Length: 325
Image (cartoon, rainbow, N blue to C red; front, side):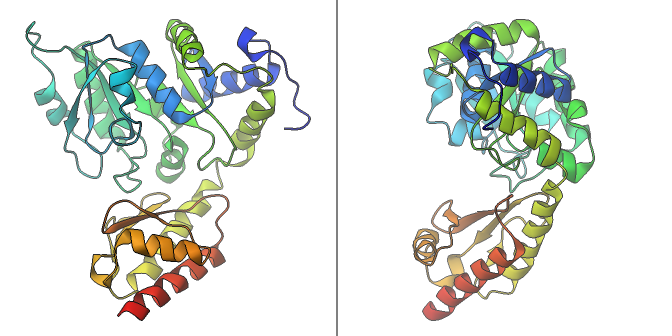
C-alpha cells in the first residue's frame, strides 16, 4: 500500500484503482467496475441506478439491503420493497414468480431482484447454482434486473468450487467486498455493463464517495485477490471448529447446524442470560461476539482469527454461562 502508484481517482487517473477495477471486472465477467468506499454504498448505488422512484425491489426478508442499510433503498432509490420468506436467506423461483407484480397501473412495477451471496442472516448459506439459475431465468423472462450483494461471494466460490464469473453470469450487476474475508481495510467494487457503471459514477459523486489518491486502498484489494482467496477455506474450517465447541456448551444451541462458510449463529436463550448481556460480558474479557437479537449471537471467522482464539472465546463463553447456571 505504501508503494502504490497513485493519481486522481475522481478523474480516473489512479493506476492502482484502475487496475483493481479491471481485475474485479475480469473476475466477475463484467464490462466495467467502480471502486467504492463500502459495500453498503455498492448496494445503494446499484439500486438507485436500476430503479426509479416508486419501483419495487424483491429480496429475502433477511437481506442486508432491508435489515442493515438504514432504509437507504427508500431514501436514495425511492423504491418500495417486497420481502420474501426464504429458507436461510434463499428464496425459490416459484416464490419470486408469485411475487412479481402483474403490471397494473395501480401497482408499483417490479424492477429489481436482489440476492445475497452468501446470505449473512441466513447463517452464511450459499445460493445453490441451480436455484440462482432458476431465479435469474424467471426475472429475465419478465424483463426484471437481478443484482447480487456479493459481500461474501468469494466465500461461496471457495466453499462450492463454482467460479465467481459463473455466479455473476446469472445477474446483471454484482459487487465484491474487500474488507470482509479478503482482509482489506476499506472498500468494495461494483461491476456491471459499461453504461451501468457510467451511471454509477454519478451516484458515487452524489453520495460523496469520490476519492483522490485512493490507490493506497486499491493496492490492498489487488494484493488480496492474489493472496487471500484460497485461504478463505481456513475460515470455513475454523467456523466448523467453533460450531463443534459451541455444541458442547450446555444451554447453547446452533441455529445454522450446517456451517457452510464462515458464519456461526447460535441461540443462548437457555443459558439464563440475554445475548446482549453475554456479548457485553464477553467484550469485557476481550472476546467480541455480536448479539443479533435477545437470544441469538453471531460469530464470524476471518483472516485475523486463529484456532487458539476460538478456544479462548469458547472457554470464556462456557465460564460465563456456567456461573449463571
